[in-house]
Amino acid sequence: MEFDSLCKNKIFKDVPDLDQIKEDPHMKKLFSSVFTGMSGRYTRMRIICAITEEPMNTLEISKKLGLDYKTIQHNIKVLESHNFIIRKGEGYGDLFFPSDLISSNLPTLYLVIRNVEKRLNKSKKYID
Image (cartoon, rainbow, N blue to C red; front, side, top):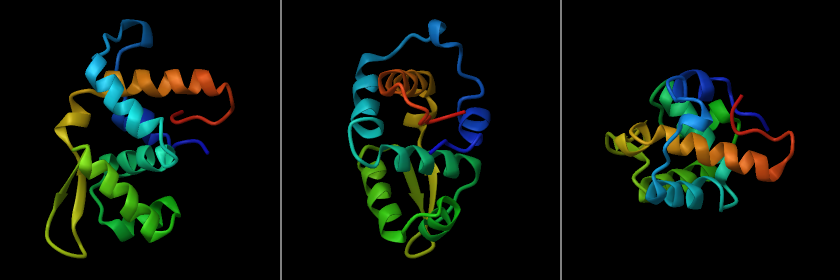
């Protein structure tokens, strides 16, 4: 499952080349636990990609990603518990946005994702 090109074009467009990234060890550990170590890692990254393109509610994310509503709900809870996304609004139509924690640590997130891809050594890519 490849990630939409928006991951590279929107989220990581200003991230330097891999060899120029100075990783933050604390953020690397945190990102690794959420985006590489659990079964929903691809779903969580796809959610971040989707809401970076345009803030959405749970149903809109579910439709855009072609995933079950409850799957999206669960992964949103995980992302919120780590302060990776922000909820605005009250109730069913709450919109989700990427947090400053994500925005200010994109190079480290990019490094984590690329390192996982190397270990997997498969055609499955997080980002284009």
